Length: 168
Image (cartoon, rainbow, N blue to C red; front, side, top):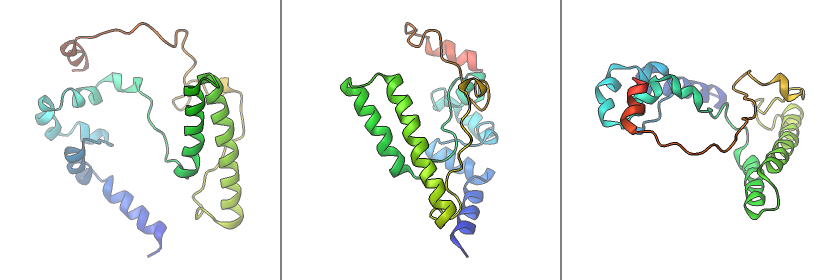
C-alpha cells in the first residue's frame, strides 16, 4: 500500500468517533464535537477543571484554532523563530516582525509549491497559495479578524466558579 493511502487510513482511524473518545480521555486532546458532548465527558467533567464546560460553551469561538497542518514545519519554524528573536532583541516591533514573517513564509511556500509541481517533492501534498488579496477581503472569512481598537486591554480577573457557570 502506498504511503498516501496508509496515511489516509490512519487519519480516518484516529479521527473516528470511538477512537477519539478513548484518545481524548487519555490525552485530553479533543478534536470532535461529538467527543466533547459524549456522555462519558459529562460524567468526568467535574474532575477536568472546566475543560468540558469550556469546549461546550460559546466562548470556545473566541480562541483561534491552528488551522490546517504546516506543510514543512522545520523549514517554516526557522523563519518564525528568527522573527521572534528579532522582536525580543528590540530590532523590530511585533507588527514589523509579523509582516516580515508573512512575506518570508509566502516566498518559502511559493518555492515549496513550485518544487512540488515540478518535481513532486511533497508527493502532490505541498502548499497551494491563493492569489494575494487586500486584507479587507479576508476579514470575517475563515477566522480572519480585524485589528482590535485596544490590543492590550487591562487584565481582568474572573472568579473561576462564575466563568464555569457562564459556560454551562
